Image (tube, rainbow, N blue to C red; front, side):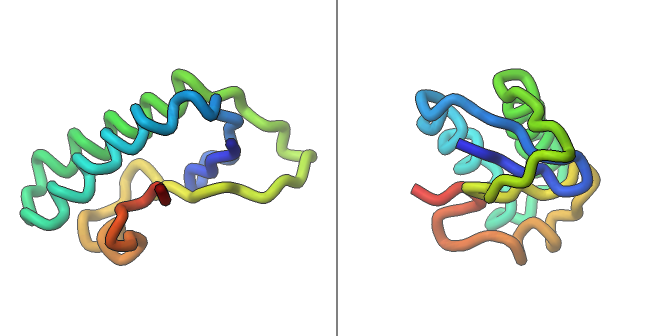
Length: 92
């Protein structure tokens, strides 16, 4: 699957990692709902770092549609909350 991190670019992430990423996404969602800024920051950083670890960067000259978009690392809790659906940032 293709994941875009805003301001960083796209990464190809193994489909087998969707459960792990959904679990991390749930933490982001929960911290947004709780308005817990410190926990939110840790949850978002953990999600983005994991995507970077398991993902393979896609060259900038290759145009592909993203399966989902994650916020940039310095996004605020309110900005991330505005991007979310009731499922979080990652569909499914």
